[in-house]
Figure 1 (cartoon, rainbow, N blue to C red):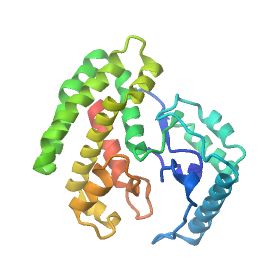
Figure 2: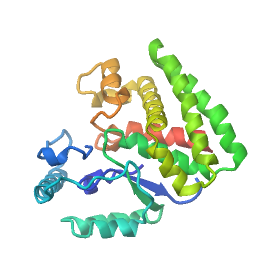
Figure 3: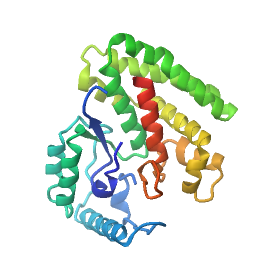
Figure 4: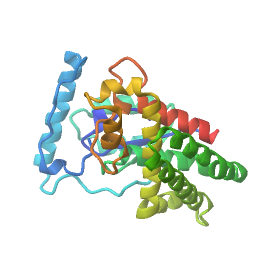
Length: 275
């Protein structure tokens, strides 16, 4: 998952669709964006982000009802279509250049509602797209074997009171995945329908959050610099396991000179489970 939030935060979080087989925005109309300089940020990075923050504030002030409301997960759009949506922005040229570079690896993108669960919903949608493209016997292996293995792995790393929850949610995730892949209509409509099913979708996103929490606990040395003094348990409960939380996103922060941890989580889990 690539980090475009720096450029397109004035719209909504986005999920990119890779080619081949293989600051949430809901409340921004009620508050002014605040830009804070973070450690390690160069003058150029600070100036660019400050300009984007000011542009966002100006755009919200000219929109009486705040940002347009979007569905939880949009239909796939081409990168060219997205560029057209943003052609009036103050950094449209920069965005177009980035999108041209992305065209070599991605066929399209989706808007994902900024409700505090956008990273996990985008990850879920990517898994479902790849899963639906697999042969039926491999989809069955994913649901019956891979999901159970990931649940058991997570259960070993989570506190005892959440171990059984992650197993139960894994079973719910597998059932939800089957609905997407075995839907009679199938394709795009099945994915969008599944994303709009409140309870099954929430269970799937909660399962992914618990997997992320287990991953963080097992790699705490990578995450501790992002925790701002919080102990591991407090950080995981407050920033990862809580649904709909407006949390910092270490998966989108590459300034510390290493692969973003949650990007590593999403890449390693999606590849190992869907190969």
